[in-house]
Length: 440
Image (cartoon, rainbow, N blue to C red; front, side, top):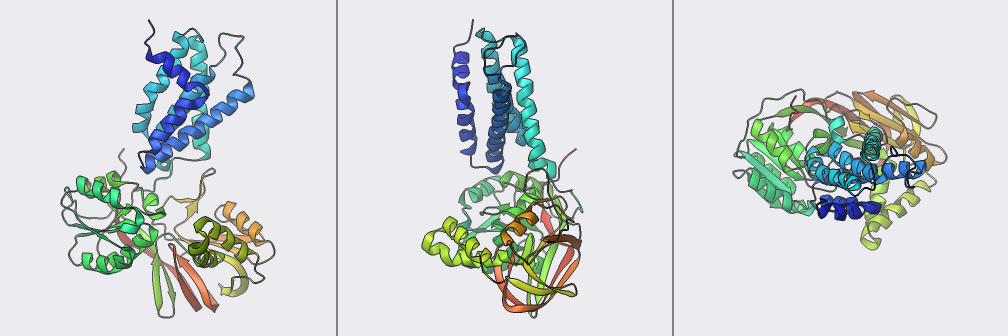
């Protein structure tokens, strides 16, 4: 006898309605891993549906071995979710299996149809992973290991949280996971002072915020020679994600076990001005875009301001930067230096596989006509690519001379003015950071 729930599941799965609802439920959990799992599940579903349509599998089969489209969709969504998050995959899998079973139990399909459809759907999910790798596929190596204290209940951790970064929910979760940790919540303008105070009484300095806030914490941790614990909480969290920390569970696991690594730090110097960067440092178009966007965003909003800034900068009759680079003077649209080599995998944005490789990943977009085309070509190019429009090289130190007064330099989302000689260099393995060490 057919359980009453199976026909309802089967009808709900028609046209993907059930899977869109499941994706919405995953996204509502507001955890990065669940949101990515939902996105990957829908992408896999979309590819499977497109394949079904291209092969004409939605028509009534003329052979009992003809694959089942609903089974393909179910397997694609469930497999996509599981590839990104095995835990959520285990939740979704029984539902997908029930949908497939309902097709057989209702007599609409034979088992071979369903098995063939499931194979097609799983194949679509793996094809999506080949184009856009999961975070687990690009996790940085767990070295060089650092000797740090284990904090089973959080005692000794003083974490400063930027309240403007939407950190309240994560701070509550951290207090539940590590009840003896001290948490200081403050406004953005008070973050530097609170970090300095925290460093005087902490065994481990913690920070919750975006890349700019983490940059401020790194400077303090370097001076105080303290290990740093990073909890992502802002709009951009590139350093935390490249480190392998997405949420409180990841950070708490590392703190309890005393797992940490040493990572490189980038540094810029211009006259008496010094600063560090954990992600990227750039001069040229990008800092100009940031300045223009900040000028217009209070009046017209962030997204329109970004579009207007791009149009104004790229249509200007002058190059944003002209400088002597490694002995030769060049007009430049952009000079980008990454703290570590960025690798492209499939269609995904570049990620760092190694946070202690001793290299600055330098990308230069030469001056010339059609800056938008040149910038797009550089963005799509891989490491060490050379062309008349752009070049890429890995070095440990870079010197720019004759930089015009008022030139903007952006680092980890912050902007400052530089002129004359600018030096970019690496501080190898200078910072100790907690990160969960993969097992097995």
